[in-house]
Length: 197
Image 1: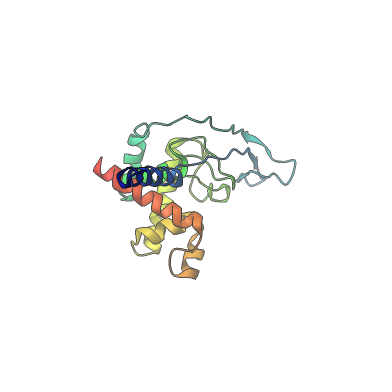
Image 2 (image 1 turned 120 degrees about the vertical axis):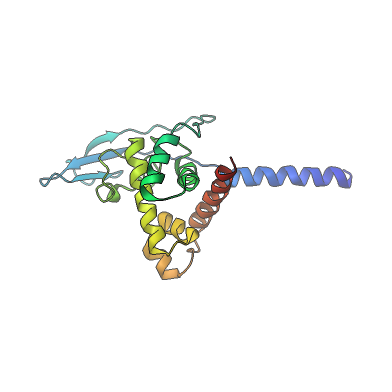
């Protein structure tokens, strides 16, 4: 193999590695819910009592299934305006979190477009985490809080969105967790792509 072909081959390999490193790999999980005596909704992917009833059954996403990147633009624009956030940034978070799949459920039980954790449903004023409008508005509101908490530092706010604000405060930086570091990198990559688009 001559030098020119070798360089071309290395470029192709590098492109494949980059694509694989940013590609979302959805994980399937069922979500259970129950309403307590005070009317508070509780969601989990691991029910601890028979009070929990199946709320949403998630099936593995078939390979090759893609979701449009413009379908939720009106909802993203509404959340952007309400929370004073960049449209492109909210969209980038959604792309990195769920690849625009409103029914996405992570292994940890995070749900919907912006991957809201069950414990945050009520705090984010969400009734149905699989409702795109509620999910985007709640997730954007939470990210706005993270942005304020970290004085406008987008990288730290994204790390807090992924790993929790206490973890970011403890490390005083992006935590040295591969998942969190990759998440921040993916969001920033998509953010610049959407800004240019």
